[in-house]
Length: 403
Image (cartoon, rainbow, N blue to C red; front, side, top):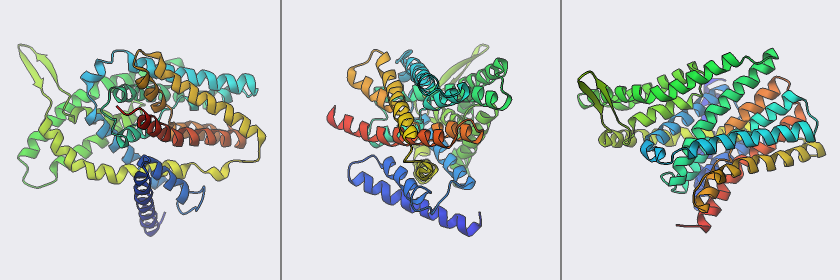
């Protein structure tokens, strides 16, 4: 892309995102819906002004990483721990049930090849934590009990999704699955998520001390951004999604995270720093609000609805069946834990959005020739509807059940 074209496309995306998010908010609709619609409007589906270019996708990835950093800062691990095994149960059911339903419908009802059915089932396992968190934030529910369970479950769901994608990708490329290789990736991801917040906490204390004695402005923002990018790179290096690096760094800088570590007779006590978290939030928030809309617009841009063969009966029957499986599989995960019915419904709805994660599965299957044009079109319909409808449903549900 030429430099002047990049500037033009970026300006179009930012203006469209702001105008449509503001319009949505004025009508009481979550602003993320406006940003998704902006992507559909300016992308290949309608006007065709912006295409899913690599450069724009990179900027969108920065946006979602920064958003997950903010989510990490707001996540209260002690509160999440009080949820016990609930996030794990929601994640496992929300992963296994859609996968099983998607595979069964594809292989047993429509008679599709086994590998194709596996890819379709894998696509239905996805949960877009970015979209879910943004909707809960728009509704003022990010700090609610159910949101803490959803955030924990969505993070675990992403890890399970990465492992599933590793299995399926290896099977597609080499026509065999190495359990050892995928097990190693799983172990690396687990170690990263356990150790990264503690390492980042040590770095946070050093950065805080440097910032207090800095001779020039902007040191805190520069160092924290560098740490976020470094941890995102480390996450990718061990096989985890880059957004996990942003989430781990956010946990360390939040005002709820601290730990005590014995060093012989001494004890290393790293306490939470509300002052550091407040200073960082003030400096990071404008950056997050600038970059995160890019991600949601690019989700809309990536959904090329003009690729859908709207006249194909097979596409609609398959898409309709998979859509029911996609909704039911995720929605049921909220009812597998002991919570008030209101929370169960909210958790189930919050787990439904597929977004960019589902697109990664579908595009990989299409690029490898596992999904043909009709199957890919059906998956686009499912991903689009499961991405766009949950924010409306959550808005309606919380409005009807205001507490």
